Image (cartoon, rainbow, N blue to C red):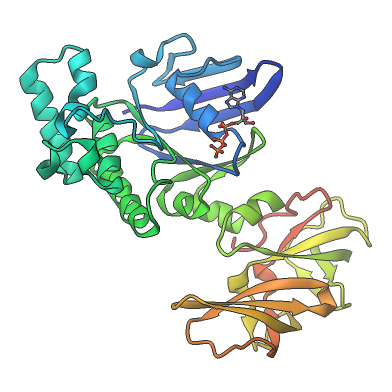
Length: 368
Ligand code: ATP
């Protein structure tokens, strides 16, 4: 297995720069997830690691070896694509062993590796079938098996679960996490799905428009998003934002006035803020407690949509005093109905504060 070090990497296609000043250190055996909206550069970054794209400037090292000029085939990396790209005329076993045949491995070694990978992925009974006789999930396993047999230093996955239905995605997510434990492999995984990122990653790299916005463990990003973009992207359902104003500092904490005039003292340092400065208060739906009067602030509003998800209920609440629509997560058995007038309690320690530029203010802040 191997580490991957990326230093001051830039990538342009013609005159258009799509990745800017990327610096990443992916540790040996780590499961790193690149996440971000469509077009932010996730796949391009993966293809650069793999050697399928040329680096415009910067340096890349795999296990301390400078690899900028090392061709893809010699990097010891295997990539699993969203489209499984299996050869339809070959059996599962032939598909899985193809790269080893090309590399002129002896037949018995190919068979041994294919059988071992098929065992890990529980597709031993499918080895004689053709891809056309397999389900989507089974095809994806074959594509992963094809990577495993190569015994690569690093596995790269490019949205490998996008073509699967919701239930199968969850199943394969668990399979890939298990695979990672079984193989102890260094893995880099690309997705635009923050739930996949949160559930699978040791470390998440959040990208936006070719910039790395933040790198951290799932819980670091959840508790300490560096800016409003990461705060809104990580966590499901999405964080609520309330346009507010900074009303002054008290004991190195920030007094924030909500649009209705209510004031809340937040445990964040008021760095660079002048009284009256516009700020945004962020609060996650799971931290708005319906009917709770004992918090550091209370809001009242009217429910306009209720979504029953079984284990939880999501209520969409219009809060006129804040000129906001907030999402509230409550218990699965919640009796809330459209039109209900409710109050919402919140704790200052659960709130995040963002300045006008969207930067999060003053650690250690909530969750520390
Ligand atoms: P998605 O989630 O939609 O796959 P992504 O985050 O993986 O998106 P990339 O495919 O890496 O994004 O694309 C990043 C940017 O680079 C986009 O603006 C895209 O249009 C551009 N791009 C990618 N490949 C090329 C190419 N071969 N030539 C020109 N521009 C490209």
